[in-house]
Image 1 (cartoon, rainbow, N blue to C red):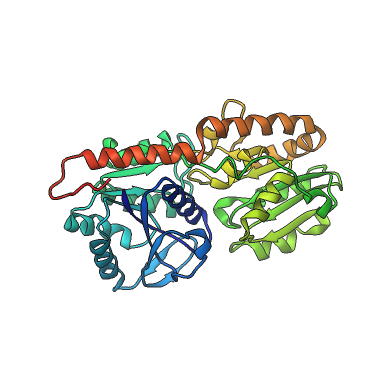
Image 2: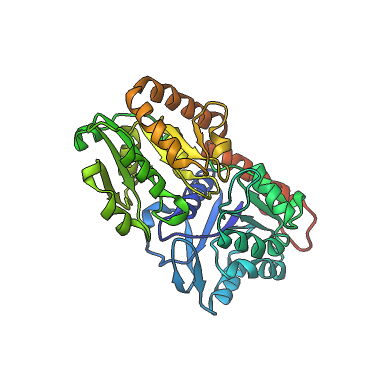
Length: 382
């Protein structure tokens, strides 16, 4: 099958990881994948070694959104006409181009699928951020013109349906992680940081990630000198938070780590993973930590609470995250047997429901379903 994938290749974020993992898995299964993205074609070529690439021109891009040039629409249209894919799959990038894709694909008579990553709050809650609410309201009318929209949980499906996206067009396919790559294993991390117990946060250092709640809880909790907190990631709040919560509190700031092997080493060497976000989609960082056998604590936002429910981890409330962590951190410090059991349960949950292998199989089935729908002039080349 020929697939035209439209997504992000840089800067690093969950959307980039999603595109890399899914496209490589599709290539491994014998599909032909062309990757259209807002990046220079020679950026990280080792991550997409067998993928034809098309670089779309842009004015500005960040981890959150992208502004294309006026020429980008023509480059995209001409490229799709030349590639002649069976399916176009857009991992939506918060770009104005997202809104023109249905019109472009209708003109070319190509089936169009979207993965909608925009984070959201928990069950029964209003979206915490006005920006997130605006994104859902802006996208909903356009998502109805996609052949199918992929979301990560039933909660998100219901949210989009309330905003007018036809439920029949919304497919729930959770994120998946490579459970062979992200697996328990040996690590010299504790020796490196001279620690007896290691806690880790990995993600953006931004307001919606609520990292300061974790940092304040750590500083206020009775933590031993042998317990250390690793903060992995970068973002707009890093410099200000780092100046207040530093090594005097056994908090170690590692910054952004591009090397995947190093990130895996960190997860294998840590005991506990903490994600205190106010909004999420389905965190790949959380899935990677669970797959690596860490005990995981995360707030009940997006689909994260659903992943951890029924004993696979500890689900935190966004209303009392700091106070809960202040109580739980010493507990996880003093009872290694508890982290061992929760780590085993987290790993088992990934193997049962959230592997990349299952994710890609569901995606292939969706492609086939879309191709079987009556369409004028669409030639099927599976």
